Length: 453
Image 1 (tube, rainbow, N blue to C red):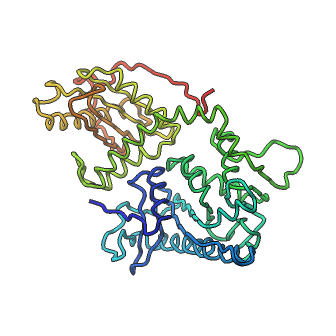
Image 2 (cartoon, helix red, strand yellow):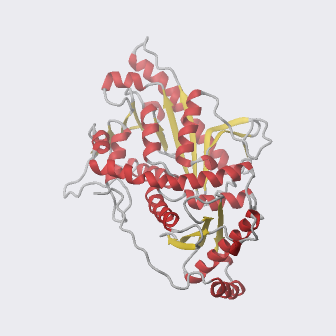
Image 3 (cartoon, rainbow, N blue to C red):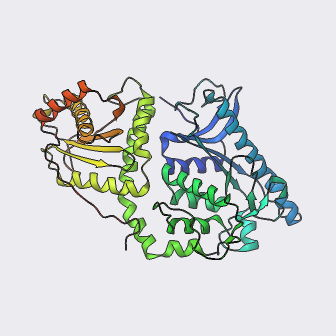
């Protein structure tokens, strides 16, 4: 069993709850330590090549002294000190990625392997609490901090409630506050969506043009309604023959976005996507507790890799996949078998297997059925690789047929297609013929808009 920290302060517990909703429990580790028993960061998230480090600080903003002096003191303790902690944590992980622990005694190692390579991207996220009320009283609106990239360096942040570039020579630090923390995490609530936003935001704020924004939520709204030439959400500058000297966002953009009919339609359409989140959490719960029915030779590490493939799907992709799986469940009687394959753009193929709990697939016991279903899922994954030679990974999910089965459980496996060889291909061709799997394919196409009309 893997026990995780719960957060030491109220704000840390709140951040933990938000992170577990966005990144899910398997990747959200609170109060992580380094040798010799010093806290490394408040929350560490490792998901493949993306490493997200959170620093959370609740600091009092004085109302009994000069406002400019109060700002400088608050900025030093809530932002400057936290930024240094984040840079220090990144430095430690780059040099000592194998010396990270879940406890202050440094006895319980961080369970997910941290591998630093050229593709590794560190995302440093600083959460600064305590100034929203005073900011709201001065500027109105949400009380979120202003952004002004003309301000450079920790020592030059003299304009109250305004944050610029903390240090252009070090890794970019994303500063969130009471309002934008919840806004960003709940609107970009998958690992892929969140890290994609951070990447584009960093590129935009470091593009060389001055950027001024009255609250990050207004910049986020622009990001969510804009796409680049690769059909990715991005900060897209308007086409102009004149030289652009800077970018300034208007206040109210987020409010307008949230009220737009297509945004409301998107939120409603995404409801089904949380079926995918529930599956991830179900697999994660058993992986963390060590209660999986079938454990591969690699143990927790193998489980994390397989579950991560599910977690790296965006919210939009989860909607598509959930619709596919839900349609299968609803339209498959409890005494029939059904298989569907869902290709993804990155060379990953998802395989869904619904297998009835009948004598054909068991000796009457559920234990035998579970074993048989695991074998069938493996065969389905191999046959998918046989049918689609461009597959890099095949991720399989199996469960009982029918909407109200007598028993309910799920199986998950991941096949790395680099292990494919002639011997496996020969056996798979035989299995495909014997079990009559994916012999006659029916193509099902869906035209799903991110923002329904």
